[in-house]
Length: 105
Image (cartoon, rainbow, N blue to C red; front, side):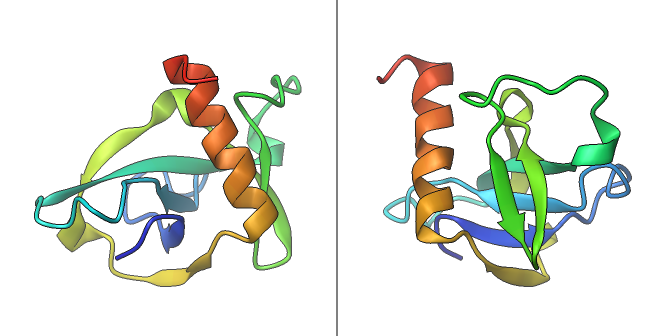
């Protein structure tokens, strides 16, 4: 598992948030959990959210909102289906959203 890898969401809300982005630092590998952020389908959001906290991230040619305030720890054993890794420009957006939430800007 690596930072910015994208997995299919194994949870009950996968119709709304089909993917999870692993945002945990690669230096922290020995934990049983990974910090993830859901990627939410554009059609599931009524009003366009702020770009700085909810950037659009591309997965398999489609765009999804990074739902940063919903980040959580997920058991690493549940992250089974890797669909890819965030593109370079999307990695910067993800890091910027985390910095905005945690005040590291």
